Image (cartoon, rainbow, N blue to C red; front, top):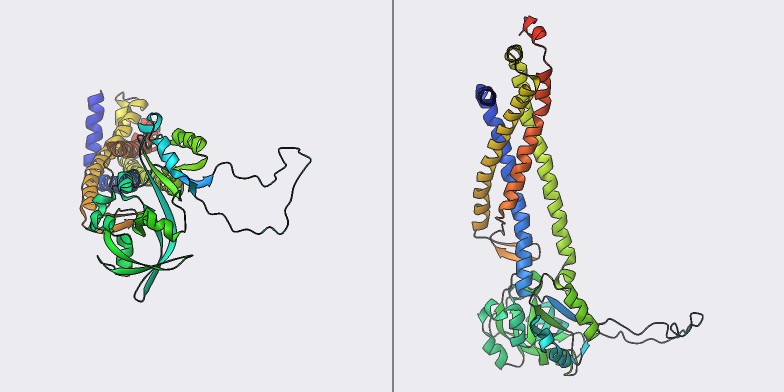
Length: 422
């Protein structure tokens, strides 16, 4: 009986070949678009996470104390006492990590040696870079280049120049590619650094790097000592310490532990990029909403062909019921037709999606995708998303067959066969 119902379902679909192929094509196109769109959004997220984990610090020890001086100095003595200060205007204290070498010594002990793979102190400063009649405000970051290389792999990201020249020259700059393009900088060019406070200094471009992270490529690296001079910091103070840890995806507990030990705020890369990760999550919800809406549209196409089949095959359905086919068997037959149309369209769409994903991934164009700059589009080939979208499409197409199949099951053979118009 199952084979008989299958043969009849196939005959129904091939009987309206043009409409069936049109419906399958519509389902295939919607499936291809959804898989490709999902691959693009997930690929961008995966690429962002991979780039951040490889380039940016996993945990950053900030110069913000976790236990700052309380505003009310007497609140611990008595709840009924208070203190106030009038006309005490002071300069805002900048964030800095004091005696950072002691923290580095703690991180190099056996208790943290396996957890923390690398640590790099840094000094950040907002400066103005001037070359001829061009000027641009930038973030200047002073680093110990060997330690910084262990964090970000900066040596492999230098596209012009080399680290040796940077190490030999006290006022040398490693310039991000975005800065170099905006200011038309080349190797050995002389530029002037103007800090917010202090005198201006002439520097030399010793290298140009490209990391793929727009914020990093829009900055300038100098030696740690030079940055301390610019910021007028003593040798024992820095803006923060960048850490690379063994497990970058389970680093929250280690960050809390380091906060307790150092007394400074410790932020994970997830904390610092929370807004971008939340944006990717919202985009993911939108994409899956599109899956549902476009799937419903595809379901209407499947329902349309089956409603037409029921209308045109009413006499055949009535004869089938007269020959002993039950209403449940007829419902199963039309649901089977919906399933076959949806499956054929979804699988065709999956094959087309593989081609479109490969096409986008191979395009030799450089695009700025949100916080990243990549050559070609970052596409995800995760088979889970193929199976999920194809499964949802087939499910919606199958469910769309319920209404016409229920109509076919309700047909009364006697009234249909008596109707001379059929």
